Image (tube, rainbow, N blue to C red; front, side):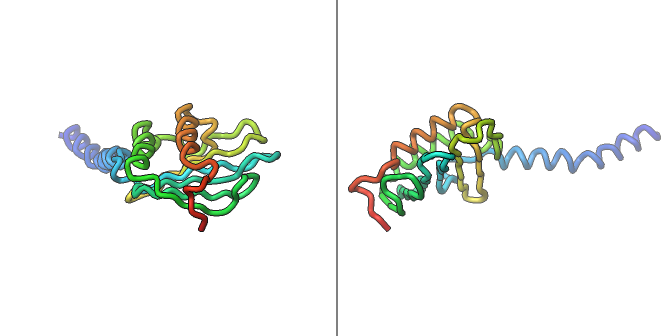
Length: 158
Protein backbone atom coordinates (compact mmCIF):
# COMPACT_ATOMS: atom_id res chain seq x y z
CA UNK A 1 0.00 0.00 0.00
CA UNK A 2 2.87 2.38 0.84
CA UNK A 3 4.44 1.79 -2.58
CA UNK A 4 1.22 2.74 -4.36
CA UNK A 5 0.91 5.95 -2.33
CA UNK A 6 4.56 6.83 -3.07
CA UNK A 7 4.06 6.22 -6.80
CA UNK A 8 0.94 8.40 -6.89
CA UNK A 9 2.73 11.12 -4.91
CA UNK A 10 5.70 10.99 -7.29
CA UNK A 11 3.39 11.37 -10.29
CA UNK A 12 1.76 14.46 -8.79
CA UNK A 13 5.17 15.99 -8.13
CA UNK A 14 6.54 15.27 -11.64
CA UNK A 15 3.38 16.16 -13.60
CA UNK A 16 4.05 19.95 -13.73
CA UNK A 17 7.55 19.32 -15.12
CA UNK A 18 6.11 17.25 -17.98
CA UNK A 19 3.47 19.90 -18.71
CA UNK A 20 6.13 22.64 -18.95
CA UNK A 21 8.23 20.49 -21.28
CA UNK A 22 5.31 20.04 -23.69
CA UNK A 23 4.58 23.78 -23.69
CA UNK A 24 8.19 24.59 -24.61
CA UNK A 25 8.14 22.23 -27.57
CA UNK A 26 5.01 23.87 -28.97
CA UNK A 27 6.49 27.35 -28.56
CA UNK A 28 9.72 26.50 -30.41
CA UNK A 29 7.96 25.58 -33.63
CA UNK A 30 7.30 28.77 -35.63
CA UNK A 31 5.51 29.04 -38.96
CA UNK A 32 6.40 31.30 -41.88
CA UNK A 33 3.20 33.27 -41.44
CA UNK A 34 4.11 34.09 -37.80
CA UNK A 35 7.33 35.92 -38.82
CA UNK A 36 6.60 39.60 -39.24
CA UNK A 37 10.15 40.84 -39.92
CA UNK A 38 13.81 39.87 -40.10
CA UNK A 39 16.65 42.32 -39.42
CA UNK A 40 20.33 41.74 -40.12
CA UNK A 41 22.93 44.13 -38.74
CA UNK A 42 26.60 44.26 -39.57
CA UNK A 43 28.65 46.24 -37.08
CA UNK A 44 31.94 48.08 -37.46
CA UNK A 45 35.32 46.59 -36.61
CA UNK A 46 38.49 48.34 -35.38
CA UNK A 47 39.09 49.46 -38.99
CA UNK A 48 36.61 50.74 -41.54
CA UNK A 49 34.15 47.87 -41.79
CA UNK A 50 30.69 49.00 -42.90
CA UNK A 51 28.08 49.43 -40.17
CA UNK A 52 24.54 49.04 -41.50
CA UNK A 53 21.30 47.12 -41.04
CA UNK A 54 18.70 45.68 -43.40
CA UNK A 55 15.17 44.95 -42.23
CA UNK A 56 12.75 42.94 -44.34
CA UNK A 57 9.08 42.86 -43.36
CA UNK A 58 6.58 40.22 -44.41
CA UNK A 59 4.55 42.88 -46.25
CA UNK A 60 7.42 43.38 -48.73
CA UNK A 61 8.95 46.52 -47.25
CA UNK A 62 12.73 46.69 -46.94
CA UNK A 63 14.51 49.23 -44.75
CA UNK A 64 18.23 49.97 -45.12
CA UNK A 65 19.98 51.99 -42.41
CA UNK A 66 23.58 52.97 -43.18
CA UNK A 67 25.43 54.19 -40.10
CA UNK A 68 29.22 54.30 -40.54
CA UNK A 69 31.75 53.50 -43.24
CA UNK A 70 29.11 53.09 -45.96
CA UNK A 71 28.75 55.01 -49.22
CA UNK A 72 25.14 55.97 -48.57
CA UNK A 73 24.50 56.72 -44.92
CA UNK A 74 20.97 57.36 -43.77
CA UNK A 75 17.67 55.50 -43.85
CA UNK A 76 16.27 54.19 -47.12
CA UNK A 77 13.11 52.25 -47.89
CA UNK A 78 11.98 50.14 -50.82
CA UNK A 79 9.16 47.73 -51.60
CA UNK A 80 10.77 44.47 -52.73
CA UNK A 81 7.44 42.69 -53.04
CA UNK A 82 5.77 40.18 -50.77
CA UNK A 83 7.05 37.23 -52.81
CA UNK A 84 10.74 38.18 -52.45
CA UNK A 85 10.30 39.08 -48.77
CA UNK A 86 8.61 35.77 -48.01
CA UNK A 87 11.36 33.93 -49.91
CA UNK A 88 13.97 35.37 -47.54
CA UNK A 89 11.81 34.90 -44.43
CA UNK A 90 11.17 31.31 -45.49
CA UNK A 91 14.95 30.70 -45.49
CA UNK A 92 15.05 31.71 -41.81
CA UNK A 93 12.16 29.35 -41.03
CA UNK A 94 13.67 26.50 -43.08
CA UNK A 95 16.98 26.72 -41.20
CA UNK A 96 15.09 26.88 -37.88
CA UNK A 97 16.91 29.94 -36.59
CA UNK A 98 14.49 29.90 -33.66
CA UNK A 99 16.57 27.00 -32.31
CA UNK A 100 19.90 28.89 -32.54
CA UNK A 101 21.66 30.19 -29.46
CA UNK A 102 21.11 33.82 -28.56
CA UNK A 103 24.87 34.52 -28.39
CA UNK A 104 27.85 32.87 -30.04
CA UNK A 105 31.12 33.82 -28.37
CA UNK A 106 33.48 35.99 -30.38
CA UNK A 107 36.97 34.52 -30.65
CA UNK A 108 38.39 37.29 -32.85
CA UNK A 109 37.97 40.77 -31.32
CA UNK A 110 38.52 42.73 -34.56
CA UNK A 111 35.89 40.86 -36.58
CA UNK A 112 32.79 42.92 -37.41
CA UNK A 113 29.61 41.76 -35.73
CA UNK A 114 26.75 39.99 -37.47
CA UNK A 115 23.44 40.10 -35.62
CA UNK A 116 19.91 39.01 -36.41
CA UNK A 117 16.57 39.98 -34.95
CA UNK A 118 13.61 37.85 -35.99
CA UNK A 119 10.22 39.20 -34.92
CA UNK A 120 7.45 36.63 -34.60
CA UNK A 121 3.81 37.47 -33.97
CA UNK A 122 4.23 36.59 -30.28
CA UNK A 123 7.98 36.87 -29.55
CA UNK A 124 11.37 38.14 -30.70
CA UNK A 125 14.56 36.14 -31.29
CA UNK A 126 17.96 37.83 -31.28
CA UNK A 127 21.19 36.17 -32.40
CA UNK A 128 24.50 37.90 -31.65
CA UNK A 129 27.91 37.07 -33.17
CA UNK A 130 26.36 34.91 -35.86
CA UNK A 131 29.81 34.60 -37.52
CA UNK A 132 30.61 31.92 -34.95
CA UNK A 133 27.28 30.14 -35.17
CA UNK A 134 26.11 27.58 -37.72
CA UNK A 135 27.44 28.23 -41.25
CA UNK A 136 23.97 28.86 -42.69
CA UNK A 137 23.77 32.11 -40.70
CA UNK A 138 26.47 33.58 -42.96
CA UNK A 139 24.54 32.39 -46.03
CA UNK A 140 21.41 34.13 -44.77
CA UNK A 141 23.46 37.33 -44.42
CA UNK A 142 24.51 37.05 -48.06
CA UNK A 143 20.85 36.71 -49.11
CA UNK A 144 19.95 39.84 -47.19
CA UNK A 145 22.98 41.74 -48.53
CA UNK A 146 21.73 41.10 -52.07
CA UNK A 147 18.57 43.02 -51.22
CA UNK A 148 20.19 46.23 -50.09
CA UNK A 149 23.85 46.41 -49.25
CA UNK A 150 24.15 49.55 -51.35
CA UNK A 151 20.97 51.52 -52.05
CA UNK A 152 20.43 52.43 -55.70
CA UNK A 153 17.89 54.71 -57.41
CA UNK A 154 15.00 52.40 -56.52
CA UNK A 155 15.46 53.17 -52.80
CA UNK A 156 13.68 56.17 -51.32
CA UNK A 157 15.59 58.17 -48.71
CA UNK A 158 13.63 58.95 -45.55
